[in-house]
Length: 293
Image (cartoon, rainbow, N blue to C red; front, side, top):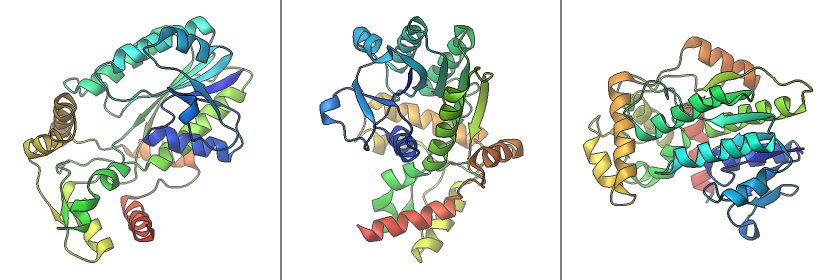
């Protein structure tokens, strides 16, 4: 029996793969083409596509613990539901599912609604499950806004002023690795649970710009709360459905925020054995990595 990690090449999945590999955990990593996989030593690449039923049947054979992460896409819900049905047929003993913070309440946002539908299925599946609900990733800012930050000094992510408890992807990977290893190694299944993965501070747009101003030693300006220009810009580089999906999420950031509770932060601290990384720490490390390139 073993562990299967899906979404192994994405932002969270790759961080998780490296974290587990560093702990010398034996596991399989799902990829569409194992011949092209570049995983750390000791990781077994297995072929599979969540819309290819037979490939997933084969990938799930002999698996004890499934880490389910599938990318935001129009078929996200179908992929997850098919995979979970196949997991039950294969005799999976535990599922760890990467959902999203506020999945149950942001019902007009397509990818959050899809992930909450998966949560509802998991509640009826009859398999112990840990649902991880991460907040917005800090690393998204480094991935998408590097040129704006380093060039004209703009922070163009319109997250509003209600507060979003952004989380470092490395902290997500650390908690996920702990949950996976502990649950897989126990003789009896852990009880089902939901864990909110959050940063220590509820951040507003102007606060993020101020952090970058300090780290870069220049003025960085927050471009404002209006989400329509963000959608228009994104639509030039991504499908229209994705641009609208993310704009709808940002609209809810503006009206509701995505702030963690004190108990969420305390739980995160207990699971990590340390305080979650702050956005300022992330920004300092990001600049150092950019300077080293």
